[in-house]
Length: 280
Image 1 (cartoon, rainbow, N blue to C red):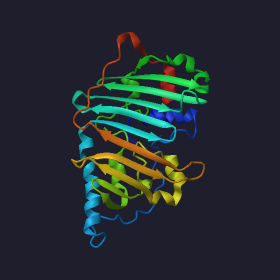
Image 2 (cartoon, rainbow, N blue to C red; image 1 turned 90 degrees about the vertical axis):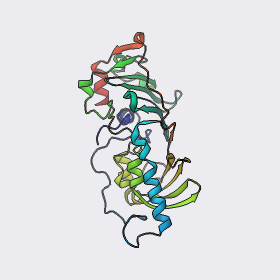
Image 3 (tube, rainbow, N blue to C red; image 1 turned 180 degrees about the horizontal axis):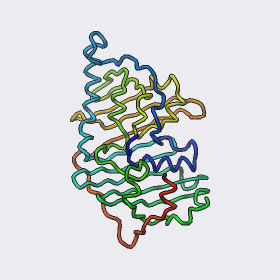
Image 4 (cartoon, rainbow, N blue to C red; image 1 turned 45 degrees about the horizontal axis):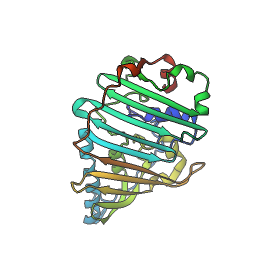
């Protein structure tokens, strides 16, 4: 996978808490590759009714504005929440990630700030995670300035301003296999998520565990009055040791996000080798 904003942070948390990070995205390989079913609403003659084709196109078009890189977003799954903003005009982004609760056995919080050409991360660990060997050298609670030469091409701590969507909703909508309009700006259908390992909202292991179910996963979507995606809910069924779960992605403030702020100088330290090792 190419650099996929904040996904590596989730991956690091997954190393500490297997099964907790529903939104993990390691991006390893072509997970769940399979024969592609016919996509309802495609241009193939007779493949769908005009209404279905229109619904499919509306969903595809709904992600266009995301590419402009000026929005706020949230993403939630089992035990995982993320929220942030992308502000392409200032070449900045900020993403806050939480895995587990402070009262749980293991929890992790990250605050990632990117303001080109600099990046920082603040890491907080709770429960047993705070007692793991080596974490004492991680400067917990401080913004750790990242050496760009050490995170270049690193999907864990980097941010790619050429691919600005942390959730990968464009990839997800391209995998829609069936869709119908259920109301004003409301849609429902199925997605072949076996093609969506590149989406930051799904992880390759989860897709693999779904097996054949990955080819027809239910979803709902909402578009704002301007036809832009405002909510996408992917309803992941139970598979293996994974419980059924909803992965919910929202977008707001298109064209009106704010620039990320540089952390206060008195809260900044240089990141130690232990931090890079954790996220590699």
